[in-house]
Length: 346
Image 1: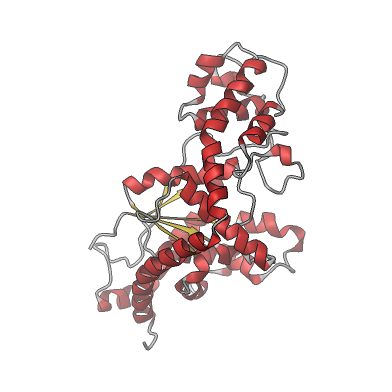
Image 2: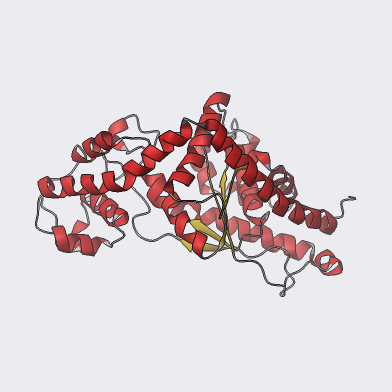
């Protein structure tokens, strides 16, 4: 038995999705529908590792679902759902909590970044959420996960948990006849590494990642911005006085220039050198209007469709419920097998 080629990815509903979320993740999900089984999840259980205002969480969950659909993810071809509707995520996470080691969790750099000096007072969920992330992926025996640089460590942990489970329960897996060709129950999930321009930086400071937490709304392009707002923010983006160079190597030490060239490259499905071959030697007065026109052409239809969908929350909720039913069918098959393997009486 070979593992089905299946992609899983999730986005946390933190509100105010922006260009970085689109180029770094959502846009890259769409073509995978042509090559894999695809499961895309709004991971609302991860969101509550820190306190959330309930109505805001519901709005943010619908916003991510609307972004998925508006960007081209087809709920008829992909499974689109929110995590909390499939209780097996939490059930498998508990099993993984008992497989994973505390030392593994303490080494997670994102936990250290989020907890800071207040690590004794953060929620237990914030410490253990990489175990839930592993459950999200392995519940569907996903063979591939699209990841950026900031998620590589979590996927490595997922592989460690899968390997330890497979090893700890090897005899039971074999006795139940539940192993793949290599005897493993869970696959060693591989990363689908995103290409260039996946780290989109602030429009105000090219050394900082684009983020909804930046106090300046001018630092980011929201996926709900209209055409005028998109163009205005790009034209006001911080730059330096020099002209655009002719070679990528000459972008070194020019973070704002590098960021804007990278955005143009990503939006046009080109590489940076190709963009510089067109615009090298020209000033920002030429490049920024061209970038604004491109960004509006790509993003304005998405923002318009998102607003239309968000005006009809019942339709979004119906999509999520239908997707959750399809996800639950796969998840329960996996959990039924896990219960047999670990010795739970069913």
